[in-house]
Length: 78
Ligand code: FES
Image (tube, rainbow, N blue to C red; front, side):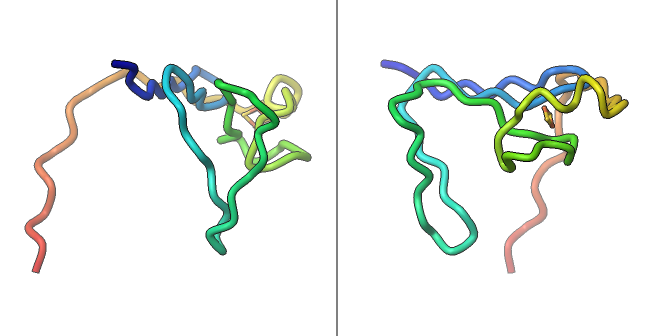
């Protein structure tokens, strides 16, 4: 069984891959990924093709190092 894998790159995008997925906009419309089974989402804000990474993070000066860690327990739902 495949599992969706999300990888956060230092100073760069968030990559999705490893399993089928869809990406929707705020209105619920699905992006046509044209057969791609992996995609990089921009987290620097500099892409001209948001929400997808176009490589602009390399020249934007974006700096964000992320290391895996444990989140606190979720707050109880009321
Ligand atoms: S993370 Fe690549 S353009 Fe923003």
